[in-house]
Image (tube, rainbow, N blue to C red; front, side, top):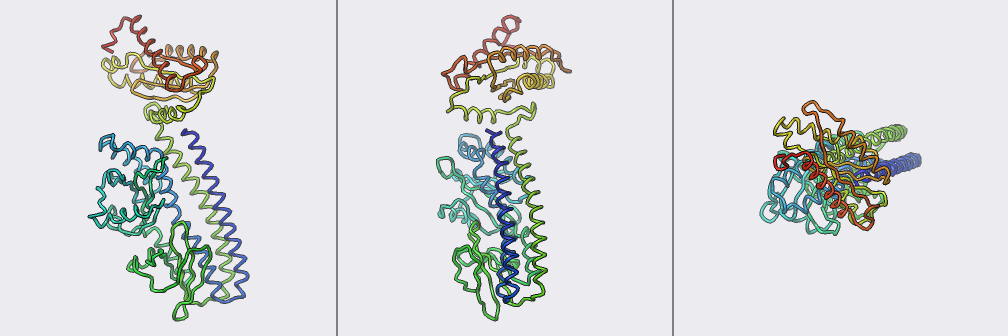
Length: 477
């Protein structure tokens, strides 16, 4: 499934790039066309286009944490970890989630990345278990209770990040649900205000405007002046959801343009003193062209980096670090995918176990045992790798899921035996393995679980024969 997952993510990346690029090009085209008309109009119409450009810039800044948080909530590893949280030790739960959150933090450079389990109310972050959430008695946790009452997929909340010395941050809180829709908890990222503060300041200075983000209750959620955060916006603009830029007259000759940001459920409000210089028209056109080119380049680079990092994180989570084979987690996921399916006619399952690993460890040291493990992996990779997937599922236990014909299976057995016989290490000179092969052609009516059982039994029979013919006491190995 992980190979299909990687393929799917690549498709999503390409589709996202195409949609965003086309949308941006269309938006830029409309902006330029509209500006050519607005050059003959008054400052009110020009202010509306300024708001359009600011909207594009702010959307690019704030949409990334929303997309990342939604991706976290759909992550199968995180869902399974929360489902099994109460069946494993606290230490294992903390270790698993901490490692996952650290990979997100290091991969995307967010200072606040978190998961809250609804079953245990544990608050995990990349440092481990931070606290137990108590929305009824801890005012810092009131957001969690409020989120539960909204019954939404995600919500944006402005508050203090306790993990970063009470820095103001925009938190993207996202509901984690299993396939049946059962609520498991909340995950998300916190984007510190300083990440967008410079962007807002530069736009305000460039266009001589005031930029605000206001929630549906009229509270200021984003402002370059932090003293205004969470205060009530002084002007009554009668804001309502819609896709249009709305023009408003303010007192003192000032004007404002508002735009509803559906994904954030906030309003962009751009205030202006209502004056403009028509001589700036061509500069605005040039800025839009430059911005278009700049965003195209940044978009391509960003999507490529995200795609590469996501693929690397996904592959690392399915890889055994000692042998570079697929690990137990990858094996269980592949097995689960095949459980409900009829096996293909040329499907072959292989079980491999190292003979005498304990003796090698006790006699020559663990370095020798590790060498046997790597040697087994190399032999399997060399002989079986081009026909399917190879897994290390335990200390000295390996498995392979192949698609080969009956003739090929006989050939592969010989090749694998030859590769093992010819193998020589530096710490230890001889390698011995026991194998079990079971094919869907031989057992057409069984499922993957039964095929694995048959293969395991044949491997154990081969191992028993090895110890019988070699005269080695199996209890000492």
